[in-house]
Each structure stands twice: as C-alpha cells, then as structure tokens.
Length: 602
Image 1 (cartoon, helix red, strand yellow):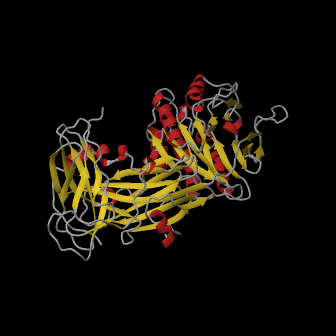
Image 2 (cartoon, helix red, strand yellow; image 1 turned 90 degrees about the horizontal axis):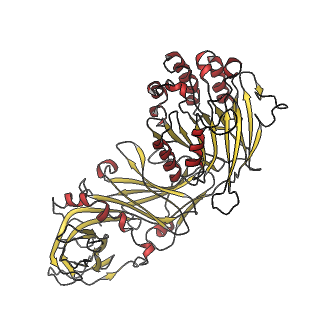
Image 3 (tube, one colour; image 1 turned 135 degrees about the vertical axis):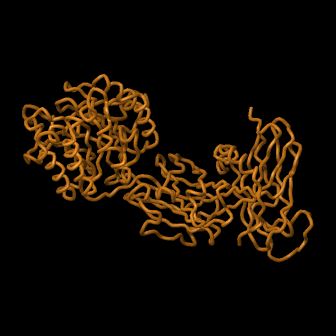
C-alpha cells in the first residue's frame, strides 16, 4: 500500500488566473492512512512557449542524431502560428517531417537569475510521432560540450511525454538552457544505391603484406563518392601478433585512411588482437579503444573501452545499427547487446562477431548461443557478419516472430575470411550494394590489390562470393510533432506552511510582497509524520496590475486568462517522473536550507 500523501490538488487561485491583492494559495490534501499532513508552499517557475520573452523555439532537420553543435545552421525560428501550436497542451501540434534527415524542435529558455544549484530543474515535452519511431529529448551539457540524452520513447498510437531532471551547474549557463527534441534516424537518399564494405582478418597484411592493407583502404577512399560508400565493417584480427608494435602501427595507419576521409567504420578484436590465450586487450585498447571513436558523430556508445560498441548509420532513408562484440564473449556482453537493441527497435541491426559461423557453414556453439539469445528475440536483427574461420559461407534462417506459423523475418548470417589464400588473402573483401528500388542487397567480393572480383571460382562455387539478399529497403518517414513544451523549476524558496491539517482538508497560505503585473508560479509539498512526501504540479497566476491594493488575507478573485489544461489521464504529468517521487533525497536536502525571495518576472 502506498502510504505517501496523495498529490496536492489545486483549489485556488486557478491556473493562469489573474488575482487581486495578496493571493491565498490553496490546495486540497489527502492521506491514504488519514495521517495529519503538513503542507509547505514554495515558489516555482514555469517557462513555456507562451512566454515569448523567455522561450525561443526553432525547427530544423539535421544529418546526425543529435546535431553536432548547440545551435545548428539552417534553423528557422518558430512563427506566431508555430508558437500558438506549442504554447498549451490542446492536441494541436507543430509537426515537422523528413525522409532525408532527423527533424527536430529546439528550445532556448532563459530562466530567472535567482535559480541556483539547489533547485530542481525539470524538462517536459508532450507530443507524438509516427508509430514505431524513436523520439529523444536532449539538453546541451556545457561541461561536456555535447548533447546529453535526457529521455526517449518509442512512439505508439497515442501521444506520449518526455521528461527528466537536469543539474543546473551542467546545463544552465548565463541563465539559459538549450533543449532539443528529435526523431532519431537520418538519411541521404538519392536515385542510386549506396554501398557498405566488409573487411575481416587482415592479420597477415599487418604482419607481412602491409601494401595490401594499404591498397584496401586507399581504394575505399578513392571510390567513396563514385560507389557511395557509407560504412566499413571490420570483423576482427586486425593484426596477427598482438605484442608486435609494428603490426599495430600498420593497422593504425591504414585504418586511419578511413578517418582521414571521414568514412564511418567499426572494428572489433579477434583472438589474434588479444594474445589469443589470455584475452589481453591492452594493445587493442591503445590503438582502437573508445577514445579513437568517441567524437565521431555515428559512434553510438562503447562497452568496456570499445570491447563492444555500436554505430548508428543511415543511408537512403534506411536506418541501421551496427553492433560489435569482440573476442571473449560473456553473458554480460550479450546483455549489453540486448539492451542496445531494445533502445533502437526501429533500426535494422547488423551484428558483428569474430567467431560465429564455422567453415562448414553451420553455427559454432558460441554462434548458437548468440543466435538464440540475441538474434531470435530481437526482431530488428537482419544480418550477422563474422570471420575467424578460413572460408566464405552464408547461413539463412527464417524466424517466426509472432508465433503464427509463418516466417516474419529472414536473417542472413555470413562468414567471409580469405586469409588462407596467397599473400594472406590478396585483399579480397565484401562489397554490399543496396538497391532500394528492387529491395535487395547485391553482394560481391573484390580485391583492390588484384583488381579482381571473386576469390572462389563462380562456376565451381556459385553464390559463394556473389549473391542477392532480399530485404525491405523502403525509406522510412521521420516525424516530430510537439504539442507542448515547458521547463519547470522547483525552488527551495518557501512561501508559507500549513501544519497538522486533517486528511481531505484544504491547506492554505498567503503570498505577500508580490509586484503588480508580474507572473508567478508555485507548488506545494505534502508530508505526513512518517516521512511520506508528495510534490504537486507547478501552478501559475498573474498579480493584477490595477485594482485592489488590499494587503489583507481575504481570498482573491480569480479571473481565468487561459483555457484550463485537459483533465484526462493521458494528459496529466506522469507521477512516477515527478520530482516528488524520483528526487526525494534532493527535496529532503534542499528544503532544510530555506531562503526568502519574492521576485517575479513580467
């Protein structure tokens, strides 16, 4: 049983009312166990788009998620009509769509100069998107110089809410906070295909044939525009002997060609990269750890210093997540992958391991574990790439995701490792050409070193080095639709207190010393004698500029100036997200250090 007091209910003044004289703040409080309740009233601040002097809104679409700067180029300021759509929660939306980029709305909010690190800073967005799309809310962190994820949701049929608290010291600078809400998934479609390149097991090139390694990545750079190369995979064994510094220098130099030409790529550690016997990642971390990739816009996140990682890649309106897990797979690493996939369900997932398929074309026991624990339960997995074994094989599974007896998904599991050939494989690597018009991936195998297609003889081994993968490549539409946005600040400025009230009674206090014509916000905290505590919403009113000068404590007259917010359950703030539940310790600490202010803002 929840023994906390119920959330205080507003009695008066009405939200967004205009009041005469000194406002009497009233709330109704109830306790489920009928304990007496103490109610403390505090000053708050609420900033939404209706406050034109404090909130500036912008709309745009970016090539990355999130954008790479706090104020991206090309933004358009909200028009008067735009502002009207987002100034109140009314089911009217400011909507931006894109097939080619990430649409977003950005809010630049100026807050009162009295707000400090002891105050709770809550960001709140309400709106919708296309069903199945991921919508994220970011705030610019001035300490890290980057957008930090605050909250996200996968859109369903109904409206939803993004909310979260941020620290004043990290996110507020010069009394301003920068917030961005974005549909996550970009693209750059055009009338022709795009290409992914897949490298693997370059260990002998790093050891004995560096000129082949160099030719591979130089060719990729030379053909980046012509072949529309959007991404490069490397499924491990960058070097042959992990303790040989010279081999790492070769791998670093030649993979660095992709860095120089800003070609997105991902790598993982094979057994030769980690000393095979003891899984020593020391040298791998030095050359291909998280610090090599962390500032790249496509790099989604790291597991144990790039022992695992994921990249977010979009091309032609198709949205991918490339996930890597290096040698020495653990249950913890598998759980990490599942968590990442759960957070990106609307991206096509391509998994990368060093060991998965055997040379026979069947799954290794580890591959079986990965298949059953990752591939099967995650409906967005479409392919698995691997190396290690000296062969080229393709294994196809059809998976019935909804249990109706009909396959819903085809997963292509591929092995491509040519190191057993002359000169360590002579530079053969896979080219994956995406043909969107015909919903297929054309797979070729090519050696830039020899300028030759197909390692295996196509007559003797048809569909070993070249084949077709059928895959739905329809461009996905992106949308962000804002109904309402606000910044709510719960300060520790106490207005007054009404103690030992009975459950169900009205608690009240008078707020004196306010300036005529100013806009004020407040909230209430209800506490019982057993440490139960609940925090109300923030409510606002305007002190009338002309009229009664009374300083007594009689109830003011409410003159509503703004339509009341919808009262249905779907439109109410989520109590589980409210500072009264998520930040009890913060409230306990801040309310023990009271200060007095009665400033307002016009």
